[in-house]
Amino acid sequence: MALFTHIYFRIFCYPTEDAQRVTDALLFVAFGETIPNEINLHEMHTSSESRTPVIVYELMLQDKDYIHNFEEMMRKHLSVRNLEKRIDNKCFLYLRWNKQEAYKKRICVSDTGDAIYCKAKIQVYPAKKAMAVKKIREYFS
Image (cartoon, rainbow, N blue to C red; front, side):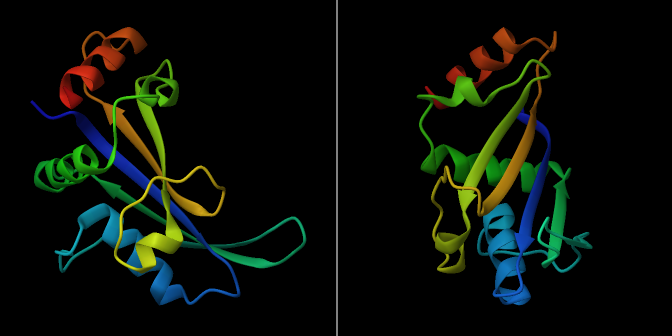
């Protein structure tokens, strides 16, 4: 049984960054080395509080194979320790991946704001935080 039903990614591209490198980092974290031909990557142009232009890229994984590949990558790079703090009452797991390391084709968890944001819906019934925490613990054991 899959751990997640869907996974949502978001990354911000600032004027000092190369948009292609930013999207490549996002796609590397989501798909690894094998990026599919057809991707539904959303792009939104906005600005910061200081009126600096920012591009927001968003991607949703719903395909079971892609989700499975992401779960396997996650298993290699995360430990169960502290993950329950990242699960909310709606059974979403929140993670941040280091954007700078992803540029270099490396996977690394981040606690900084300039990161690749990941929000993954844990597949549990009933949808309660305690059940989601239990499923995460079982997955990593």
